[in-house]
Length: 346
Image (cartoon, rainbow, N blue to C red; front, top):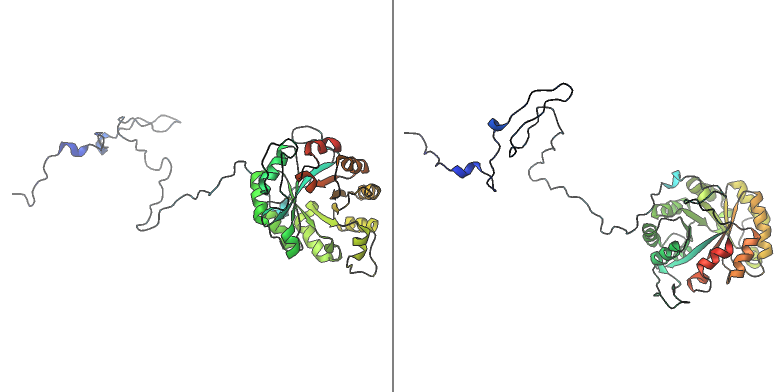
């Protein structure tokens, strides 16, 4: 008598769930080796192939009992339009030379018309009315939708003003900047609240491509030098050219400088881009032309922001020879049509 009872004969034990035969060692057939091709396998159709030892991909590492299963982390929201891959702030490529053609071969305009949005509390301070003239389109204050609209109309650069950051002295709307950078793939220029090199790094990490420092950095050479080490040619300095504001600014020097002398001083320090705020008024054409000529002598790009209320102002600054024109409320309110502004600046 055997020590234990024999297991009852079960013909279905050798079948899988779907009635297919299970692989056995006796069913593994191996063909003859061929020169240069390795040993091929000839097995039954229902038997999985078994590679010879030390051939094929290595098996996955065994997971310890009780270890948590690995899961892929899927982002909560994938942007509809992939953002352009951005390099670290210290490794930004040099800006394109002036006069080159665009990415599709069309010549660039002499004057860039740059839409501007004031950010306050993560929203646009001015509500955008896309159909104010035609009556088509709903108003919105979401900055990513506004930027997407202007990029679709041909904008190559967008200017963002951090209103809350300018009051607090530090960036305050970087989340909104990140949403905009995830929606469009054009350079983003940020102004407001950038008063240190760490602020510039935060702006670049959020998705900015260019930064504009306040006029107070002019009398802080160490801060300006540190910011230039981070941003290089992608850094600009904002200047208020209005005589009463320029003279009343608390300069840390015996006597206030002149605009002409300030451009040469900043160019000598390494600044290659200046932004004149409130520099596009009806009586500012002569001043802009004189400063633009001086900026060209120092190889500095001069951008003018504010003060333009119609297409005649766009043409006046184009004739003055400025490098770029920043339009904000005039575009958002519909006072100036963006495609018409592009034609006027060409």
